[in-house]
Length: 338
Length: 289
Image (cartoon, rainbow over all chains, first blue to last red; front, side, top):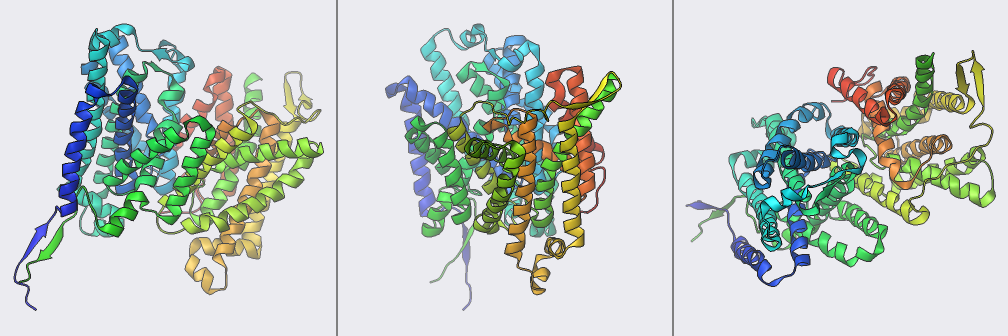
């Protein structure tokens, strides 16, 4: 058989349908304030930042092989960075958010220098130590209320808008935009040249090195991007909770355990996985809300079972069975057979 | 004299930290996995001792006779029933499964025993001390813990380098496939390694429970201490681990002498300094690429 011609495809029927569905979801999210209550909006804010954190951790562990248990370091820095910028430096809150993100990025660089001295499993626990060090430092600073924490001064909140409804609208749209933007950013990045390198590292670290991919540089980029996303989420968390303590800002349960479980259950190593995982997480949380510690026990047990029985998570099961990809990052060669 | 006292107390606590680290080091050495639930197994052992003491009314040291074999069994079953399925070139499965276990153990303990702090009572021994001069007193309990740590580490060292089991551990660690050709049952060897690791952990956990108060949430912090001790001491060296424990204990004691809230932070800082200047630890014995 002579291969006459071929074409390279990226989108499939499923991905076009998926994009249409996603547009519909975005339109729905924009319309939410018009018909839903405050509780629903708060829930969606939380969904948005967990989605952003999950995408970030998926890039780290799912693609770059950097299994971090220390993302709470950057969420916490984002929390405190935002408080310092607004309450102490009197910077307007909406300007303070990007400034905080830049500051977190600058602090992340020296931590990368330390963490990257440890490999594999040691890296995981090293990042955890770094996060603990930051938590302990903030428990010592009297200006931020030491271990008991501090509240966001009321003038910062009023600075966004004097009107509560408008304030909640702004916070809602900013959060949802960040959630969606993170997904799109990861998707577009994975389709780029850099993303191809990252996907190659995911599939085989040794082979990717042999085709000339600079692994250290790619990994460092992922580490920094994940830190920036976590810092951004930190700033949002303060705006939403209006109060911060070192234990909450640097919580390993909130910012690492939950996020890790989301990615594992949803499906590690794909763009869709963290989205599915976030949905599963919030459904489980509402079902188990009245059972205290049993909620985390269930979540942990499910994550263990998924890791053992379906290492590619819920999305992996769906994706491998039906060959559905909502976010096409791979290329397919199709032969034009007459 | 104050500083000598501080350093001696710190060094004695270091024995306990070395004991924390020994189990972690053994599992990493044989199987290349880091057990993120390590700290929670320390706490679990202390709670098992609470149950044994409540049920049959013995003192904590006698409870060891029940807790150690129990944790040995838990370790064996844990490895055979769960962790063996995560072994392979990918580091993700063992890390995430043990991380999940950590969360599960912590919250099960929280449900069963509440968040209240506990302590294992050991009258007389926990307060007895030997006076040396008029300003220095060395507690009998911390000294005994240190001696136990040295004996346990010596025992593990002997087991690794002088027995058939130890040879099988080292062979499996070096090359699991070749070890199998020589008739070593890897799955069983791995299970025995985890069993011994958790038996050591249980000794550490009970001694820890006698020394300080504990609650279900303090496991992860002990995991971090254990890890820091392993890295400070250098991979693959058990006596290095003892030295690492002493260094961490002394660092924390000196930090606490300046301000009680600085103890943990001082230990972390010493770890980061070692990581910065001697990333392979102070007494490395193996090279792990």
